Image (cartoon, rainbow, N blue to C red; front, top):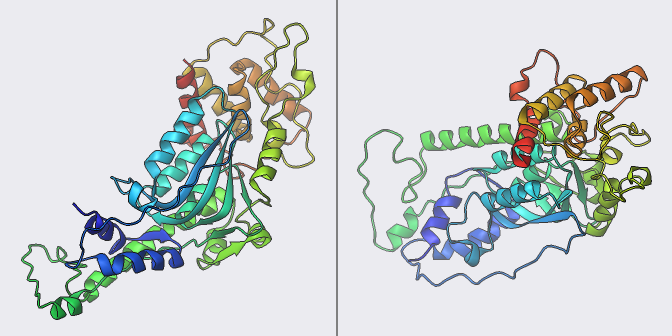
Length: 402
């Protein structure tokens, strides 16, 4: 059984988050092969690519090629990457105690809209538990950028590009080809909209209007997602007009944080994870888990020396943390306006009472804690903490460690 009809159904008549030049390549390959003339010959397999070898304690998640919700057997034929596979790798890295941080190595033009925003939310929640950094290596366009924008920090190579924050949909009218082939299709249907986007006849005005409304709706979701993750206004995101930005230009418009290579990212991330020498206990030679504050604070600020250490605990042991404790810690940090400190307290299993003491001490000394990761994540007292993604992530973290 040929997979081409299935591929065609996922490309035509559906909103796509994909860079237009890549869409043209796909159409050039599939166009002559879709329909009655399809001979079922398999598509050539694309060259495979492996992610760079990571440093110890850093998981690298490859996000390569065209992105789809699920591959259903198409990956070998078309070099597709599914949102489901990325999510599974992300969950595995979060649950693995040997993984201190995660890198999204992105080289993708984008793909399907279905499932991409759910995955972006998942990446954002994961970034509250462990550092998640992303790299456009060399392209992170459309759906790929939606995923990368949820990372704690976004790098782009000098030749790399990001953006293409837009939505596109196409309808293939095969009626002329059908006539040349001597074939005429007759459809029998119930429900006025049932025959919309029929590829064997020109698109109707009503079907065109429906498809345009759906494209606009998905575009609104895309804009809001990027604006929230990157700390931009929706107007600023729309003003990009789905353009692509390279290297330093991407940083200038706020779509990336720094220009650098994969090695540059690893070096900065490793430095951020490295605990100060003072955290080593001379008696046992034990090192506390990595402190996250160095890269979560504004440049030039100093993390408070008590973060991650529980003054109520003197035996050096890590008692089990309940979901209730994790939720209380998340709520305390959110109400204090410093949600970026949740991960550090959870990593060291600091008790809620000690967390309260650290936060009160920081406020008393006038220490300001600003996050580069979630500038809009501070929760006010009037918001529902039960719906706060930081609180939900903390609950998940505690549940995994029970």
